[in-house]
Image 1: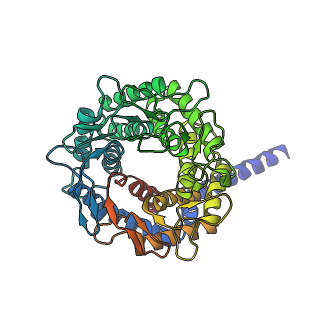
Image 2: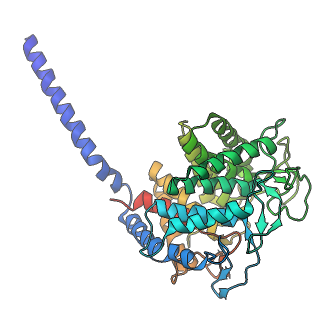
Image 3: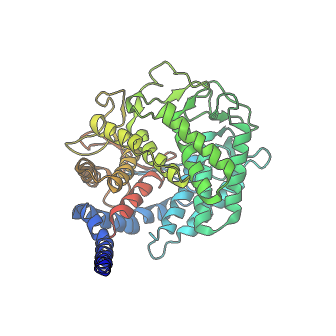
Length: 437
């Protein structure tokens, strides 16, 4: 009797093992079935777009072959005269060429690693303050410094660019420069009393605490959601490559600050600015929320937590995605509006390129985590809108701003605030989420 029981157990175990094996073999196909074929088809089209049109546009129009670095002053109506080179733009272009190279999105005849190296050399030769550390805000086209201020928003993008360039080139010099900049920022920008980081400084790192010419991003004296978001983004990638405990501590603090003060779990309470002690700021310019930043924060938060091996805050993530879909999304035409306030319909219904790009990225992550029909339909509608109105069919470049109905409002293709960063990143995340079978 005992022998029979053991025999039966052995058969049951073998049968269970067989079922598990079949399940494991079928799981990729089952996972793919969660997404409609249309998402896969569009991801394949976007990959072709990036390779054949989008990246070649930047490669052949933006590289300054005379002075180095990049010149961005182009419009659907024609190129405009450029007057300066700005830290954020130069850094984002280094990141973009490095990222495209890493992802294998290169067209024959285009050397994206060399394009990134070109920007890296200009950055180090002309923007780096070799005396005080940190990087200046703007130079002229040849590299002479115009605005010597140090702005944390820009410094964050330098780190983001240096890390991605290191990944592409294996240049340890680039990674060491990223670490050096992190240390300079911690020394000069960190608020030892209240936590978080001050954002505006002179060339020798004296704080700028009141609005003044040359403090081009956000409001001096306040701490901003915009800057702390991108500082978190930079720290995430720096920690991913260094595993440095000091960087991790700063990253965790940046995540906590963003989750508590700027992008809370109740998305309607999001805000643009806080005082140094984290108290609220009165005034219309500091109230309200940016749907693009909210959904960008959501997916970057998950990325940061995963890099730190922390449990992802998916409920916080979904709260921001669903708030944007409820109050800031055009369910008729597709596309994410620009600005809103609290739990009310969007106030500014323009559709700006980077806002659409961050929604593309966020919805791609949302569907991979939880393939709700609401998310899938919103993503399909978004790509519909992009294809019809925002992406220029001739070169694949996204127009700066279109109206709610898709009519062009700003036909710029490249300028100091518009490089190959938001839209490339959004398309790559979309491609990687749905492009493989």
